[in-house]
Image (cartoon, rainbow, N blue to C red; front, side, top):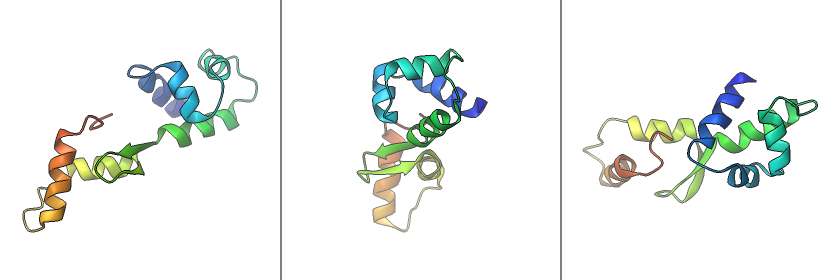
Length: 100
């Protein structure tokens, strides 16, 4: 539970409550209640938040990937023997989502 709340608070540093609530598919009021510890039975809401915030759209691949997959692309060794992977690696090194 605290991991999801930490993820939500981290996301709020770079985005608005309205944008996050739209990604999650809930109202701003519900998300605000969750943040303030006043949401009744928060388990389902926390799962929705976790599922929505644990993914991002990769600008290079143009598809939704998990943050773990994104991180693995960013941190992989430079692929000197594969031109396609090299292009992807270069894009990751300059990506605005890197580390987010």
